[in-house]
Amino acid sequence: MSKFKKKKSGDMPAVNTASLPDIVFMLLFFFMVATVMRQNTLMIDNNLPFADQVEKLDKKDLVMYIYAGKPSQNYKQYGTEAKIQLNDKFADVKDIAAFIAAERASKREELIPFLTTALKVDSDANMGLIGDIKQELRKVNALKINYTTKKGSVFGRN
Image (cartoon, rainbow, N blue to C red):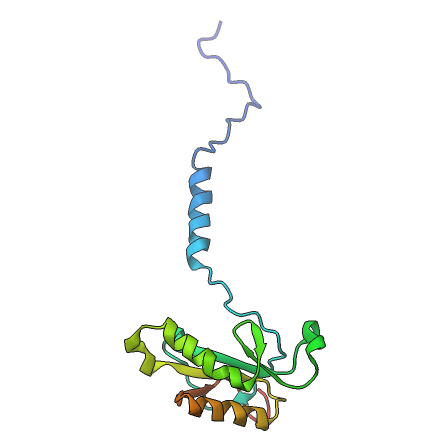
């Protein structure tokens, strides 16, 4: 009779799953903290023009976005002419003053002089609409205007 018994082969030890809930919650919290929700649903075609001399804005929370362009495929019932989009709805030029006032009211008073109006205008939009937007911005004294573009050559689109 032998002194040592031979181990039976084929028995696998069970996988320890005690730390699995910790890992799942850690990943859940990471994605909750790192994810930024989209603020506006784009209702227009917005093919931004190209520019070769661009600068990146420092503080994007101080930017008010005004979109202009033709309604996209899902919003063809609003026509085919270029329209203005403020937040999540179409607007007219006369609505810009109220939009600027609402954006200013939502910011702290010391940040109001640093607010920038960013125009995200489709490359095929006509300049008459953009001129009207700029005139309305002058009326409400929103003189800090930024044109949002893609980085690349103006002529070669590279």
